[in-house]
Length: 198
Ligand SMILES: Cc1cc2nc3c(=O)[nH]c(=O)nc-3n(C[C@H](O)[C@H](O)[C@H](O)COP(=O)(O)O)c2cc1C
Image (cartoon, rainbow, N blue to C red; front, side, top):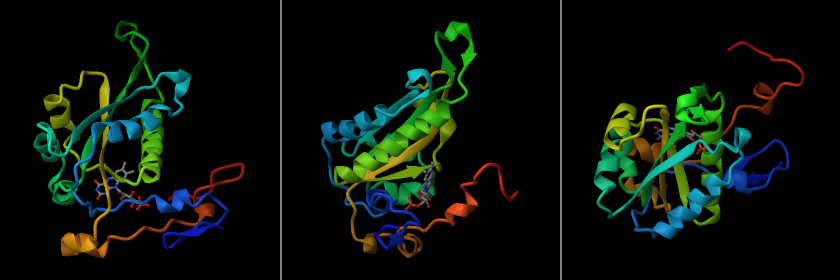
């Protein structure tokens, strides 16, 4: 077991996995595009089925011409805190393999894009940032306004920033600004066959 960041794993994992968490209090400082591209490069080195690399990343840096539009594409509850991030990303995945005309659908495009997000989140910690995933985004508007072609699935949003004191948050968000715990490993890891039905 490993202890870090008020969390304790059941087995001796690297502390970096406990150090990654999802804060909402961000400093709102400006970051360089190269700093963000470093995180996206780590994401892009994720493994994928047949090395299809189906992930696509649409991003905006705080202070850029695209920033306000990206903030507006989050649901209100996420806008409230994510407007203080340094960068926003929408992860999109290509849901077909090969040429569009071949019509071969991909089974693993979302799984692969999720792997890329995991890489990004870990590189963010290594680079001194935090990455906070968001399912609360305006999927249809993102597709339309950011000109995502048909056949690409809007997966999730990500807020990137440096952590700030939780006193800047609303009361509701302040109360949940802590690293969360996990279910027992035995509830999710089964030796041989599925256990449970909830
Ligand atoms: C795909 C995805 C979607 C999420 N959506 C939201 C969201 O819309 N708003 C939010 O505040 N947190 C969101 N989260 C953060 C999760 O609630 C958080 O990762 C989870 O509670 C585990 O906590 P931890 O990341 O601090 O370990 C999301 C995380 C992921 C990976």
